[in-house]
Length: 219
Image 1 (cartoon, helix red, strand yellow):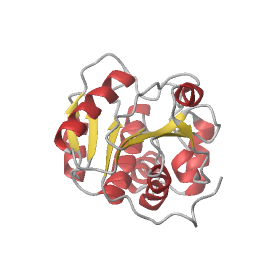
Image 2 (tube, helix red, strand yellow):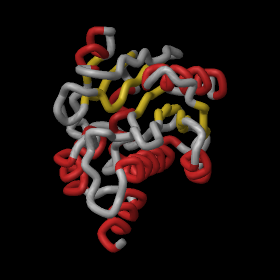
Image 3 (cartoon, rainbow, N blue to C red):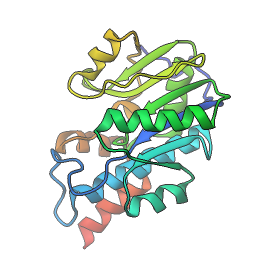
Image 4 (cartoon, rainbow, N blue to C red):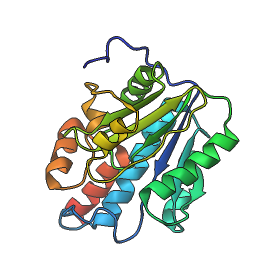
């Protein structure tokens, strides 16, 4: 399903929640290139994802949920609103971010949840996806493999219900979220392992990921 040429590149009125997992346990399946560490790459992925989301929807409309640490200042410097991670896992973090977003930004087209491991994401790709989702009460965009989820959305005052984890695309769809298999590889290429990192690099990644990998190559 290709909507890239059929949807206006707009994301006005959307609010986006991005859960950001930091620390040494981030991206445990990824083998980091020599000279860098998994958590360094995971942080770079998150910063590039949040930067793309901010470029799509605007400063103050991206809520990054994360624990204490150096990422807080970096996310705030980008223009994100940082929400403390309450603990309890990914879905609990997302619900905390959604609660803040719903309370603080009541006038909106919709609420979206975007995963933070999308280093190839661009504002245009996210805007196209949100444009497609604007006409749907609840939607899910699966990852490039079709099993996971990279984006869930809700419009009309509704709040997305996160069900991230194994086979989340099917579980989100079973929960009433319409599946949008959009032709947007920059959005749908989430990085969990070396193969998906290569795929993201072939598309082109953001400046934070580029800098982290360059440092690894030259350090």
